[in-house]
Length: 358
Ligand SMILES: [Zn+2]
Image (cartoon, rainbow, N blue to C red; front, side, top):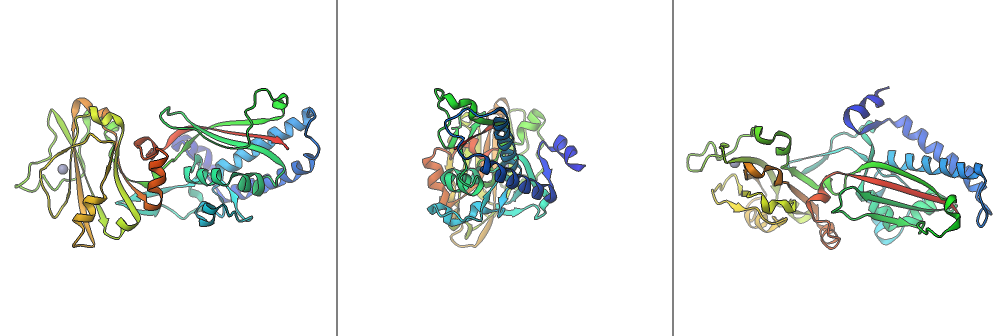
């Protein structure tokens, strides 16, 4: 089977539509049986068999949630969820359909069923579950038969855990043995789908980095060339911005806090109006919309060029992404302290699901 090979190769597995269907059927079947068993199990010790059923249930539920995007697949885009209105037809899932972003234009790399990544969860789906947990998980998934909680603990200590559902952490609870726990290490995409450019390919090449994209400064005799020298390297990229996209997206240049140590500079320009004025890169978040709005006053779109000059001695401190955040999310990201470089990278997290009979 192709799947095992792809897991080894890509770290993400690929899940096929027949397997998706099978896992949904299995889950519905198991929940059906368990719901009948669960009556009157409160307040008494569970038999070994009941505990084992509960553990199987927790495993099946985790497998389902981590390997399925849910049904409908883009269920998290239902606007009514923001008002706590949950369609009974939604079966939530957390898996990600692989997406790619090029030059600020968002597109699906494939509409193929086979491009669902396993062991990689969508942060935006997770947030929608958090804000509607009891209806989506307690109701739609568990038919009201179980208590449960879900949590995601980023390995990266700069990021906050996300915890939701029933309180199942009571250490004094004598029924603790009656809680089934599943713990899995998975990748979480956080806000990485909003990244237009990741300028961090330097890390892969280190001192041997060779710029492969041509730079407009190299071919213009009025400008300083951007060939690398012994002291610093240049990283130059072009991207197009449409005036209309400024109505929907906020563009930011986000850097790790190490950027202040990196002795980096940047030039941002329309390729129709190039210049040599370097600006020191020493802020973690730079709002680029004011620049684009002014520059696009008289045109519908422009190709922009961003040039980074990075000190060779501080290459590892240079961690920067260009992001386009949907305007309706900008305020939440700032309020939640998530308008940060780390939240725009895919990160390893511990996923924990706990369930118990009601
Ligand atoms: Zn350049």
